[in-house]
Length: 353
Ligand code: NAD
Image 1 (tube, rainbow, N blue to C red):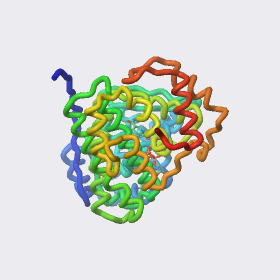
Image 2 (tube, protein in one colour; image 1 turned 90 degrees about the horizontal axis):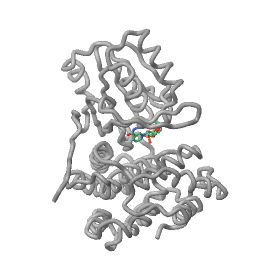
Image 3 (cartoon, protein in one colour; image 1 turned 30 degrees about the vertical axis):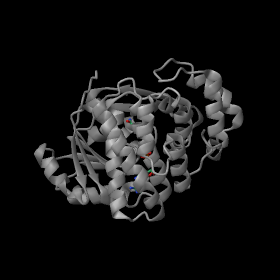
């Protein structure tokens, strides 16, 4: 067995009610003037955070999906005007992305309080959008120093978004299994993460206030996020990046629709034992990973067609062109006509096979 495993240094506080640890976490790091970040939809959660800590420099409530640089500039000017000594981001990947963008520009310590399953909090990756173009960079300094996972904060995540955000997390773990930098430790985390989410998400969509299922899902999301932060991704993430960036499709929903199709394409090249372990981690898979994913998505009742989010069938050629234009690692050779067919199926909502 040969492998390289690099663990990211990060501090994780996990559980129910863990937000109460925030004051001691600030004291531990001698931080006195945090800037709190949130989206316009999560201002009450940000206010709650502010009420728990002795001093707050200010709150910025305009975090936006895909981290547009004009919003980052506005937040940066605000952070400097109030002399903040740290950043607290409470929210999903959009808010955490803004926190990362500020932290890398200022060197300020960043505490993340994730409220979705997207996983940005565990990665040294930052995607930013300028003039409609999304660019991504990776730097160890982007990795947030402390992550507080509080299950209670995820109880308000709507059932539909819980489902797609959870499948977004599963996608990180699935691609970790056949990554160019795959290793046995990350694979263990990945399979445990997939299992936790695949078992808890159907319960959450029926009963979003089920605390046990919420806890299992957030635990799974953390494991899957660790995979995304540790090893490189492949076709699935490339397709979602292309489709999301070029056709303005929503992040978690796109991941959800594309995943079974990307795995169906790659399944011919994934080692048989790994494919079998993936199938075992998905309930009712009958030993077939693609069937396991189809069953899961059907149980979650999520939309299966990208055209439901505005993508048109005539865009398929353009998408295939962009998705295959730059060479990137994938376990199976990238064949343009077959990738076109993968995208077409995802656009019209055919079942993956
Ligand atoms: P999001 O952060 O945009 O959240 C979606 C919506 O749900 C927002 O309106 C938000 O305020 C709301 N919301 C979040 N948590 C809630 C809760 N508990 N209760 C009620 N409402 C809640 O969506 P996301 O899917 O978490 O993140 C997507 C963004 O993150 C994309 O820009 C994506 O590129 C980025 N991302 C980056 C990485 C990385 O490693 N850099 C990883 C994953 C995602």
